[in-house]
Amino acid sequence: MKPLLVFIFLILCAISIDLKPVSLDSIRKDTIIVTVQGEVNKPGSLILPIYSSVKDALSAAEVTDNADCSGINPQTILHDKDILNIPKQPSDSSSEIVMINSASLAQLQTLPGIGHATAKKIISYRTDHGLFQTVEDLMKVPGIGQAKFNSLKDLIGL
Image 1 (tube, helix red, strand yellow):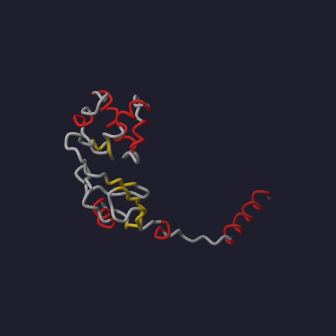
Image 2 (spheres, helix red, strand yellow):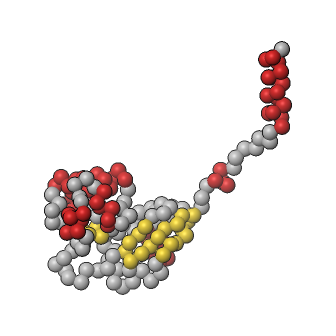
Image 3 (cartoon, rainbow, N blue to C red):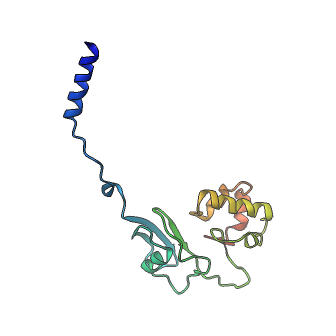
C-alpha cells in the first residue's frame, strides 16, 4: 500500500510541474567583451560578435600611428574578457621589446637573466594557462620573481 501511495504522489508531482525544454538560444552568448588599451584612439571595452579576431578589435579601437603591431597575430580569435595591450613602437632600435605572448624560445632567451630553461617555462605556462593578460603575470612563471621581473619590465610587452 505504501509503495502505491508514493507512486501516486510522484505521478501527481510530475503532472503539476511544467516541464519545458530549455532553449539553447537563450543561453548562448552572441557577443564578447574585449578590452583594448595602449596605442589606440578608442581605448576601453568593446562589444564584438563571438569569433571576432584581433584584427576586428584593432579596427574598432582605431590603432594609432605609434602602435607596434608587429608582435600581434591579427588572425587570433578573441574570447570573452580578453585584454589587448597595443605597445608603442620602440624609439631606440637597439632596445627591441620582446612580446611575451608570441615570442619564440630564441627571442625569450635574448632577455637578460632568461636562459633556455626559463624560456621553456614561459612558453609552457603560456600554453597551459593562455595568454598573459598583463606583463606582471610573468611573475606567475616559476623562477621569475619580483627582482627578475623588475629587470625585464622595460624590455617586454604583451
